[in-house]
Image (tube, rainbow, N blue to C red):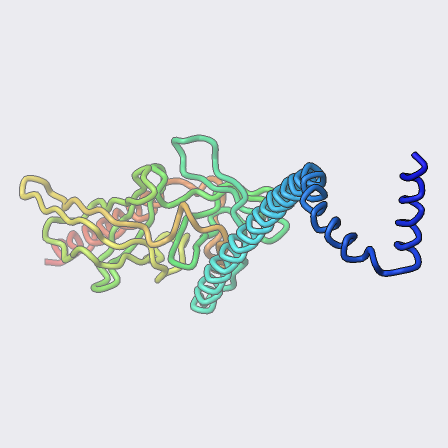
Length: 297
């Protein structure tokens, strides 16, 4: 026991005051290193797992943030595309306003009639803005309809495709007059009282004739899409596609065509009546002339 104590003292002395034991200590440290690694393995695995989980969570969080940012950018891009398209429509509307000789007022569609059997829209301009019954409405492409009800700050417009609407038109190519009636289809008008021998072709542009003093003359109305001549019928069957974007246009123009174009609620009937009355008057005058000539003879 005393020998072990003495040996221990000698080793301590050599370790503290000499370098004799350095090789031995280095060798023992090298032999012990694997044991240190083995002992530290559980802690290293735990830290690695925590770091891996943390990194995955961070990646998932960053991924969600990037998805959110991408969605925001897509929404902004959609808004920019919508604004760009709206700017194009407004430029077209302004170009149309420049071509209109009469005074105009820009309005916006704010509603559609809930009745599926009628073609009416609501605009955000009314009596306070000078809107009146019978006032023509058009978009950048052509005539849309006329005002049939006026409130202080809003008005109702009857579209030209409504089954109760009829519009005096003429063929732009040759001036032949006709009446364009609504069919209840936003993409179709029909012409009536056109003789089978009338000069009309597919692709002909129909413009307002100005008869009846409700619509100014010369505004685009529709393009002829179908002409059928039936020898067994007195009139040709003609269909046309409205020029105005009746189901798309949002910004529109109210045309102030002068006091002569204003109508009352009582006069908002079939415009054909006015033309029929004029035709009857002309026929009566012609008959009177023939009778006078016969009497003179």
